[in-house]
Image 1 (cartoon, rainbow, N blue to C red):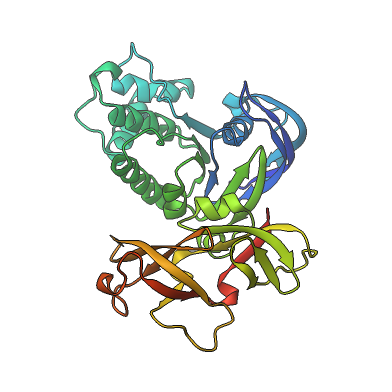
Image 2 (image 1 turned 45 degrees about the vertical axis):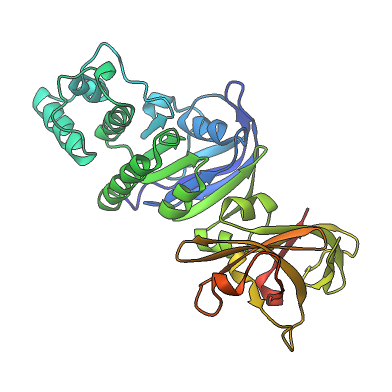
Length: 355
């Protein structure tokens, strides 16, 4: 299966309902890949997923699956399964009948249906609820049953439209872990639209970040974290300092900080830019260091423990910065509020992008 389920989008534009329309999106989901579509509200994530599933109105471009254009293929005839934020279970059917619904449409024999239902309920961790109705289940259980129903038809591509975003993070993580393990065994492709950056970066092979109907960057989680190309990409992929300024030759001019050495690439002098700097890239010094291109005197605002290290909030020239240190070279006693210290970072650690 994993060698035959390649999905490709070519300049796709269109929309679904009142959601943000998408504009000229081209991408491909590799066989067996988990591709996350990450973005804020009204970024176009739902429109993209629904157009792939066959719903909504395509105004330009096309979708191909295994090299075949899907323009004239109805949603029910596409070998995809779609699971949205609402579980959409039939309230008048039991758990077993809900999961069996799609299998009956495939005209499978009763024995095969019963076996497939039992298998999928066990795979996603819902057993002993066969005769229960949706109203008797918790929200998490309903989502698991809906997922079992989607997987029972053995889709080649599973489409998730913010399916687990409303769940408690721990439960959503458990479901995604189980789903990822199942995907690795079964080989289906998965495309998951989500607002949850932690989930996207944890589970996806690649992440496409959407803003106002367009994909602004796509890559592995580590590539997006290390080299964001858009301020929103930097903000969505982890803690970050974003400094607005203006491009200069070999530097950027940040109000309150002056010129900071940075690689602005081919950006013309005077171009409005944003410098992205991760907290762990900032080094703190109790005394002014030697031989550093970037040396800023800063004042400690406060220190808190965070993830086995220290998160230090700093201020200088009306600008706020956050640094993260491991707590071995410097401790909280070295960094009382109000103390004047120095911060530095390597020029290559900062990413410059258009504002």
